[in-house]
Image (tube, rainbow, N blue to C red):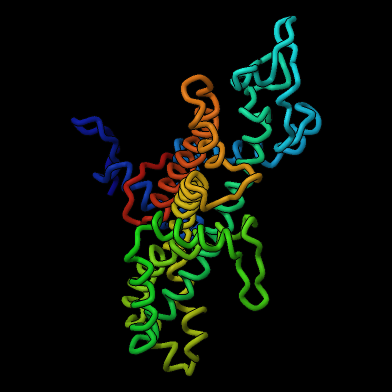
Length: 350
């Protein structure tokens, strides 16, 4: 029997009485693609997510090229002081910082492309180096969060009993405090004392100190959803079959359960990265994150607050970069979530 295809009264294309969207979904499943291949296929058709992902990659590349810009274009370092120097702008010599302490603003035709701060330091150079530090802290913190949260969530969810109770109560203790308050408390303490736990020794000025703090405070926000998913999976037939085959607890957790929570973990990665970068900026602004003279977007905003409104560029420049980075990560993360969601209604054309 042959049924002609056509268009419904509402303009929806159909074939054999089935809307085009459902046919596209059926063709996807019939093609034999795995879940991650199917997710990548969907993500490639989410142009907004890909565009914002490209924006984040651009920000990342620019920050990684900070030494090139500082050495070959600006000819200065992130902490070099030019407070007593002059720069030629429009054929005239101008002070980098004038007699009343007001720094030069953005000058497109001088090496101070985005101006200077009140200490005569190049804002553009500090912006790129600050971005390197902010993103480095955010990436390391995200790795710490995801590794610890995944292990704790899988172990607590599968083990149950006393071990589950102890791990869950520990997560509840961290969960009970707002991340900013807990981050400031831990960051302020560790900025003075540093970290000295066995083979891990970090000075208080190290970038890894705020990374460890941020990584720990966000563990419950990932571990709890992972534990909840594992609680449902451990009663499934494939787990029972693994037990019958004589597989040990560790093997079941990391060869059977872990792959099944992989999509949840992947969805949380961009979300945690955006939150980690944003929290690092907040902690650095409050003096509990990246410590001077190391620049970061948060410390640059804190330094520029006192110069508003005369030198508002000191706040706008790092603020815009922070918003752009966090926004691009979040939009791309939403695209990843939609791509991995089997219930997502995404129209895919052939």
